Image (cartoon, rainbow, N blue to C red; front, top):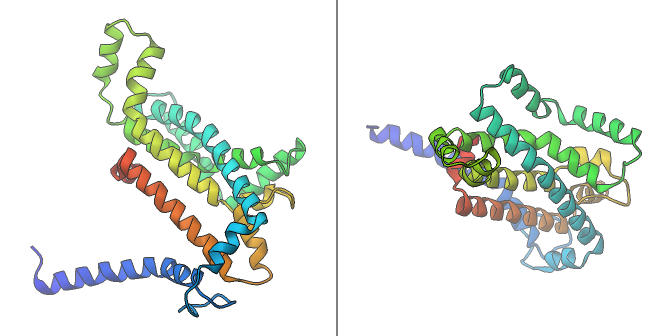
Length: 265
């Protein structure tokens, strides 16, 4: 039981952390509604003009669609691979299992610039730089550990007796996997898929190294814009990213529960 002074210090620290974490988001949100021509906080009046501008900007629309394509490719690649790897690492005693786990998590430990340069050289040898699917594949590779962690967390809670019961009832390995194992780890699969989609959507450094001027993704498009001048429409684009992340968290909580994500971390 905390004393009154200890409780005051504790909640003071909590609210300080909340304010510090929320401040960048609040500043960007406020700046996106400014009526002025330059980015500023507090905003110079209130207006939706910058949101209207990004809706009508064809270059941003095309970059957004390319980012959606990259996210879809990354998710389609990473979810099956991460699901199978996560189940295998959690459910089976594999020979050299620790080595395999370290290898699967290696993309997460290597600095992004190293991964980006290596992937750029690899894809350059095959002449596919500038296409969108290599960017999606790269995002899947570097963010695969998130899917593995999420699925492993769900697989660790699966009762082996359920699989044994299905086998005793005549179900084959494929039937057992489809009807017993996969539904049991589905919350982790959903968590990994949403994380992969958002991370691939917002990936900048690797995308910068793998795209060309004709196939820039939205983060690269934003970077190219701020190299000349920072305008409030970029704050509006940032708010769109924040809303997408919030939507993903809401879906995660509704479909799988946030505790699955927190356990996977």
